[in-house]
Amino acid sequence: MIKEFKDFIARGNVVDMAVGIIVGAAFTSIVKSLVNNLINPLIGIFVGKIDLSNLVWTVGDAQFKYGTFLNSVINFLIISFVVFLMVKAINRFRTKKDEEPAKPSEEVQYLKEITELLKEKNNN
Image 1 (cartoon, rainbow, N blue to C red):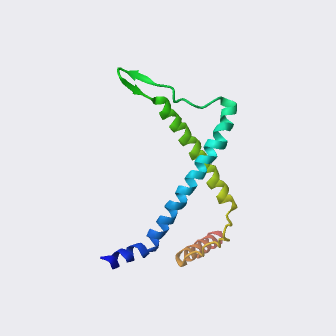
Image 2: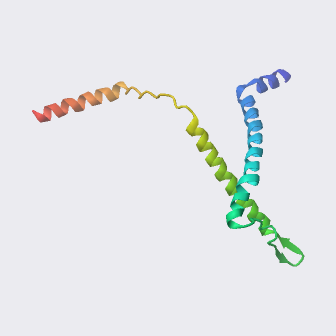
Image 3: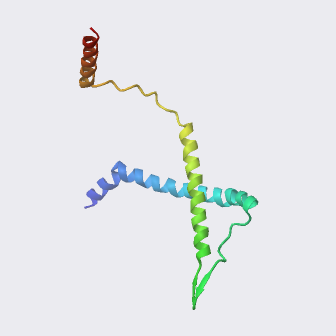
């Protein structure tokens, strides 16, 4: 059983997944810091303070804090948009491999030859 566990851990997929989770957690803290410390204050300059947490709907003794939920939704949208922009910027800086056009298969080459022969035959 220990050998089986070692084999499982040693697989590339598990190690890659672990690295991805660790990097993802670190990236999450960077994005949250970017949004909370730079983006939200910038938006606050133009829109005013974005804090809806004091919006509450009370029914009897129960309080429904829908303002806090709206804050979470707004933060999610902002964070998602910032991540989208960051990924787009990172993809722009990646070097693209020179892709050679794929060589057509033999069937495609034969079909091209047949169409050329038919065109020649129709022109004569």
